[in-house]
Amino acid sequence: MDLFVYGTLQSQGLMSAVAGRAARQGLRARLHGYGVYPVKDNVVPFIAAQEGAVAEGLVYEDVSAAGMARLDLYEGAFGYRLVRTQVETDAGVRAVSCYLPPDDVAAGYGHWSLSAWEADHLAPAILAATEIFSHDPLPGFAQLRAMWPMIEARAWSKHRATAAPASRRFQPSPADFEIKKAHPPQGRFFSFQSVEVMHRQFDGTMTSRLTREGFYGVDAAIVLPYDPATDRVLLVEQARVGPRLRHDPNPWMLEPVAGIVDAREAPSDAALRECAEEAGLTIRSLEEAGSFYVSPGASTDYFYTYVGLCDLPDVNTYQGGLVNEAEDLRLHPMAFEDAMALADSGEIATGPALYLLYWTLRHKARLRALV
Image 1: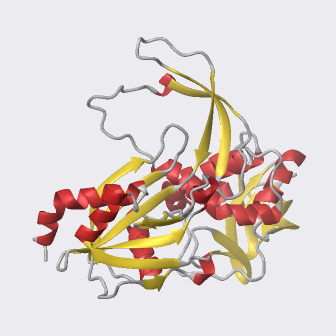
Image 2: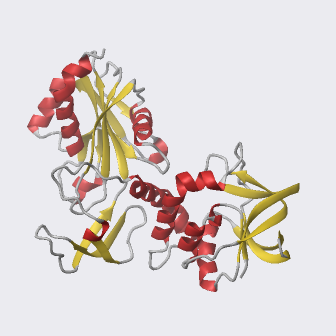
Image 3: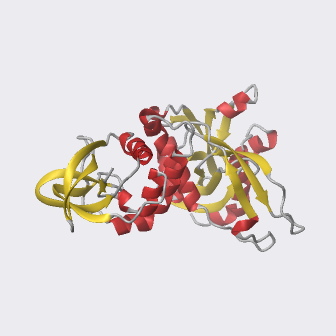
């Protein structure tokens, strides 16, 4: 089948990841009577009928039935429908198929640029498409639509990953740790995957093929709100499933403010957003307290941590969280020394809270001098 595309699928890399085989260079083509517009509050474009307008794009020739089935899932999960139409190429008019958007898509402002999108968004888009089609069986339309925010968040977590300093650690080449086989991932919100790996050992030899299992979390922003004028911090109390599954008699935990770093979001912006959403706080400034893997033996979870300087309310507790995210939070502003006493007693039993309290203790003189 010949397919006309006008948006992100013009990128051969993404088209190959979605269709399941290397895409041949498309033919330049024009769809008359349609204009290309950016989707409101999104980074992708759509087309809509407009008299006298022309949508520029590409025609991919002879897309296989298997490739079209994958494209149908990728587009159909968001309500796009395949129609027959005609486009103009340099060789003349040609009958093609094209995905039209659902009727309720709203246009944003400005113009959409493929080159600008590729520069900022192509790599994580390919990572997201690769995850979708690594599932066996593939999700249905509704499942994929529900899974999409976390798929995107995981793709951006992978895209965001950079090498930390290695002054003492081993400095590897890409061939020193290879995934030889990846089994289909499991899970619809978080993801779990079994892989077969080989890595270089400290004596210079390679291991045999090892089976390892990993939990795909996402990047998160963690913030300990701190009021340097009054020397108080804020902790969030909520019921947590992890301690409950471990049979902890009291799964209500005391933690910093925390939340997922969304796709296309800077970790610092996620930190500020979560403070507003969870605790109703306006942060004057963020102090970077370090970024790290939480449990690198089995998880991709990566935390960007901060101490957020702010004015804390003069109350013992108050309610917080977003109702539409089923958050039931109790917020505890307290004296810093009281929080340290809870750390000493073991009542604070979450790593990020302990870490950020001790980080604040180390830097408190400097932070209080900023008032």
